[in-house]
Image 1 (cartoon, rainbow, N blue to C red):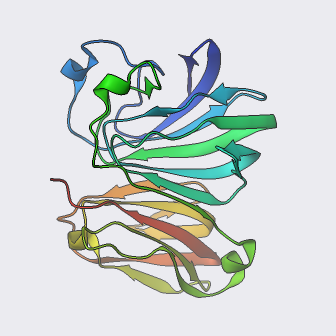
Image 2: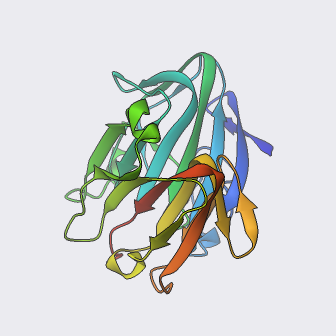
Length: 231
């Protein structure tokens, strides 16, 4: 974990996939660091803090898994899934007295948050799309695959699979979109001889062959967050 300054506030980041941003605010010329790889990390937003409205250049999911607060005017309670395409302004994200814990999961590396309205001139119009989906806690107890964002023609989709203990789940939709993240939100996922517990994070490229994961003895609740095809 490491601390990152975001407009005068200290956020803590845990890196899962790729490289987390060095700063929380865009710095001119930072594009030179672009490695074109996915970027996924867990964020601890401090109590009482506010992330101002902004946008990023790349498509991203955010998954709220702890604490409490608001996303715009809507609650951002665990478990909530948000998707924003590149160049879609969103926010503010406001943390309550507990703070907020959420994943930021990007399709590719991003040069940093561009805050509105100061950086409105960097916004590419016509690409804006956003979803905010609260996940009912009862779904975590309901075996099966539950649609959170219905599949779009360009591949965007999100679902929650709840698997009974010691049962397999085949993940076979990689080539239908632009890559996807798998987040363990309950139980244990067994994959290639390794056990992945609560809040484990995995990224699968679009060219991955179909493969199966296994639920542990405590079952498995798995978010599958699929990006659209990259243009």
